[in-house]
Image 1 (cartoon, rainbow, N blue to C red):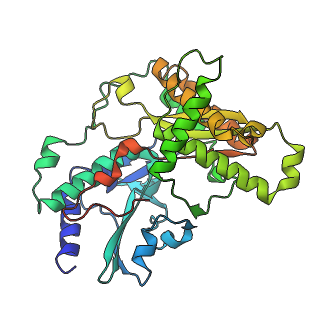
Image 2 (cartoon, rainbow, N blue to C red):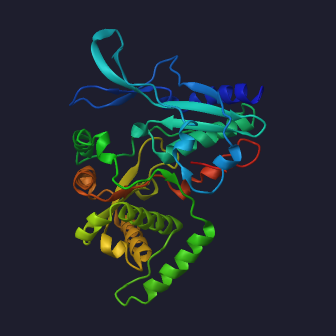
Image 3 (cartoon, one colour):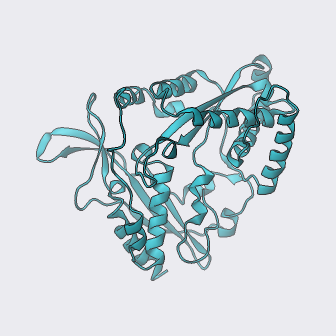
Length: 360
């Protein structure tokens, strides 16, 4: 650790010189002005070091466990503050930090690197680019060859907005408050779905799809669709076990599932485009069907259809994205939202030793 910690910190500094928006702050001026990222020389991110007596092998295990067990490994972002820009002290903006990092040491066992970042200016793919770049610089002891060959792309020249979607997003996003995202479905346990279980579910769902005469063309049942379907149905059943009386009176209520799709490849953006390029996707199904014998199949097919729709175009209804999500968050009593994707390949993050034991 005597060498590893200083090297982690040094190579982080080198990496942030290329991913400088993470070290900057998001400025939130009063409407109708647009938020923006503001970086000045000397900006930094908190880098914390902690030591834990927790059982490392337990934390990296596949068993279900309370999510709170991992919260101590993840830092909190500094609270928002009011700040001025330039020499105009009267021009005050709400300023939000972008990232914080915590390295937790488990003596004689391993380490954990916990990262908290503000999603407003970077999505999971941009974040994965950052972590893999940092790992590459650390692994090569400061060699920037990887970063020089695969730098983040900050260009916005290829993005056209003739319909003024930017302004619509800015107006509607102000109507999304944090409390709207508090799902009524408990999700305070960490769960792992094994590869064997997923393959078994895929075969079973595929068999069910074939016996349905109304299926015009076979659906592509990805690992993502099947895993999300399993989790969605399990959470609905968990909620039923805790509030059975409500479920008896609302058998045909519509449940919603929300996921986000990366649009870079679909709108021909550079592979290393840095920023957010996600489309929210809404899936709906009757609760009675999700709780039925073939509930996981119903859920998987609904999610697979939503994924297939992306191939027909991702921006044609962009004006309605936020309003639709808002309506679900406000009016739906039963919704589940997920983030992340297997395509991010987070387990490929190589620091030069063993592969990551667990990524959460």
